[in-house]
Length: 61
Image (cartoon, rainbow, N blue to C red; front, side, top):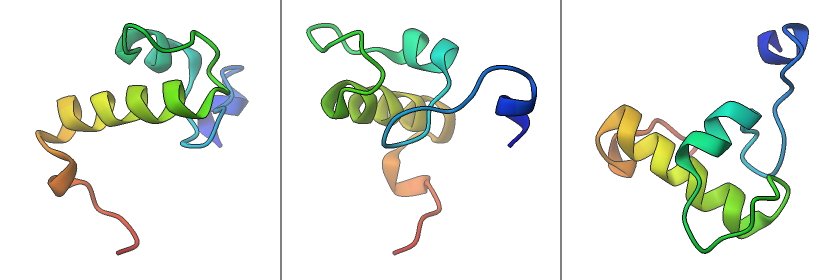
């Protein structure tokens, strides 16, 4: 993917890059991007900020 090609590979369950994970990290969760709870909550914060709501995110369902 383009992130990996640029030297910033996606990581964890929801495939976040380090800068996005750090920007949307949830206080009280681990700073380990591979920690499932930390990864998911940061990704949800990102999606809500970018799309306004989790309901606005296109997905498989």
